[in-house]
Image (cartoon, rainbow, N blue to C red; front, side):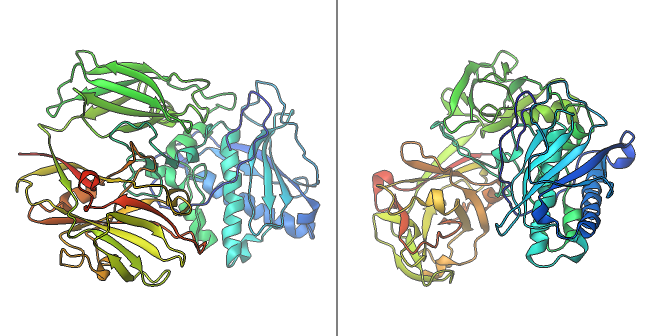
Length: 549
């Protein structure tokens, strides 16, 4: 959780676990770093966690060794644990959370404060500070103290929780990740202005996270689940940004680049003068338009970060930028976070940050509607069977969600894209569906994960007509896109990922399979209705932007 070193720290954070995606780190290796800075670490543990003090001391020595393994990968920090003085049994909070600035930036102690919990897994944590200047890994709740050399089953997972939570709060103690990386794991575009673009950390093609692989093993962003302690220690590493902050002296505040530049270029890399740049603050649930301005003769706009409060405040750390000319979108929207500016300044050593938009050359737009004769929805045969049981190819609406037996509904959309020129180079594709009426039961967008899109170049079942086998027939691209959770005038949009653009079939039919990523298992019908191709005025649309060579 993000600490506030300027006032009392009293916020608890539940660290949410996500699946790990191994990625190379960008920060320097230990050999390239400054001399090691060692901090004494002490454990203030609930007596209920300590039945055998000597055994616990031995285990804690291994905890610290594992933390040092992670720290040694790309930071100059290490922890030193003395079993004779480093274990203190106490049921009360051992720190004040009220120290005044400036805090010591080197030589201070690290205190780990953990209480016993009867929950199935360890949880919680926030970064605190003692009046002595010690950094505190506070609010931790542990099921037990493990012997890291004897882990099996769920103990591996629980130990990873404990280690990850300590590494997370340790980074905060040194000033890293203020505002929380994980607050950007899932963001809905609530601007209501096309084109819409969400952030979804779990989508490999996500426009914001796909070019930030080293963050995905950073303890500040996510917990890495592993089958063994060795796998965990191999996978986890701080991102270049986090490591750079840990290697510096930013405990009393992290100065940021609070100005940035937006650049708009045409297809020949020439500046676009008079392009309309719109910037929204997306840090809170409701978007706020901050800038609506035209580029100068050099295609540039220089902007202040703006907003209300500090740039690392959770309500002010994210921007969404969209560019237009004559009311037409010139390029895919871009998200910009204060962490991107931190990355530019601290990890890359840049004095400025520029976000560049490049428009497509002589872009043409083709809009197709779903063929009523071939679209429809399929109900799963049995819950979790992943087999089609019944279908409806004639309804005016499509169902997406599940029924009272937790059987999933999937929809098939069919577009005749044969009118595209044979030499068309597809640069962007957007799939749109319009909601019909209110949700039945709970809204699947709030309980069933993301509304995902599978793409088939041609027909799913090798015939255009809707068939039960379309429910699980192979797709050309299984995860071609994800629908934004917030509609614009009841229309939901999904931008098709770059790896799906070549699967648009210029010689015939292109089909899409829509489904939510999970069932809610509540034995109640929970679904949304969307207009099908049988409703001409509201039929699903496929917008294809392409250029000709």
